[in-house]
Image (cartoon, rainbow, N blue to C red):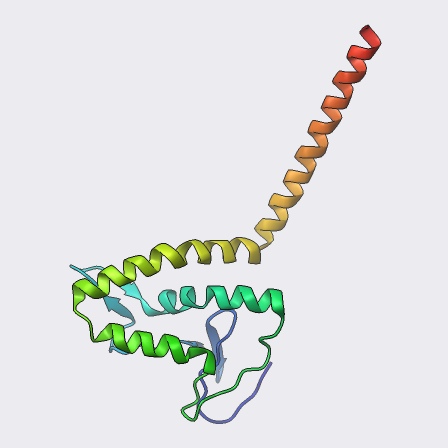
Length: 154
């Protein structure tokens, strides 16, 4: 638990933070809505987009354990967000078609990373590993029993 006074936008594992007992996003939007408008009526939520963007960083931090201390710019933003902030500002100045094309490329890269992070971060992975271990052990026992039966018959 960290307590700070002032304006901060920390980068957390969940992408959320509790402020004055209110759950809030750690990410910001540049429009008055909570999602980015793409081609036609398709919208992409900022929370999801930003959280996906930081999936590689979160995975790196879990492995390297070097991301515990964050530093902040004068405007209260984590220094980890400088590049994404500039990319986002540039993207908002692009036409809807260019924006949609670049977002499609982004999603093709980052959705698999987000899925991988979710699998590695959940107890579901532990269940898969446990189930695989039990299955392999059972197969080995069955194979051993068949060899014994053949040996006993021959």
